Image (cartoon, rainbow, N blue to C red; front, side, top):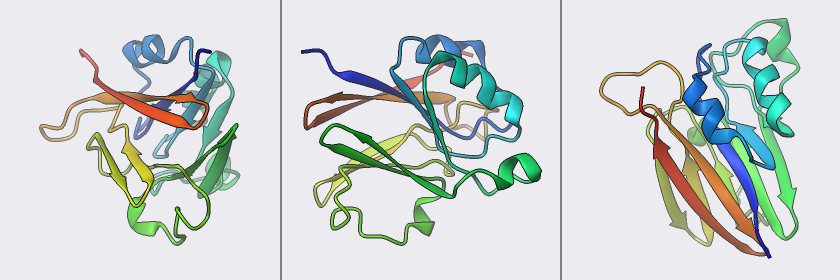
Length: 155
């Protein structure tokens, strides 16, 4: 059985790179973990796959008011909690039955397992900040197993 590929993107800040769209093509679902900076970023993503989006600290205005601050995506036995800034996390993900927490905000790609929960930040796919990479990610969910791929985009 092949798994479900979930694309992870965050901190686009108004810039949706063609390399990011290429990486996300073929995903069964896409998560944008905030700091979108405009509704025009969401349309091409939603055209690729069903989209789960949360509002980031830079997402303002009428279009952003409709976006939730957190979201939960369930893929079979795997529950994924999405929030923009991990410092705002106000639940115990393990106690809430979450297997994965996806966050953005720091612009630093990372993946770590803590207390049975996988914490993933795909980094920033938008404008480069300081010397941080321009990056994106994907989850591969196979039944109850989750693996992560983080990729630096050539820009």
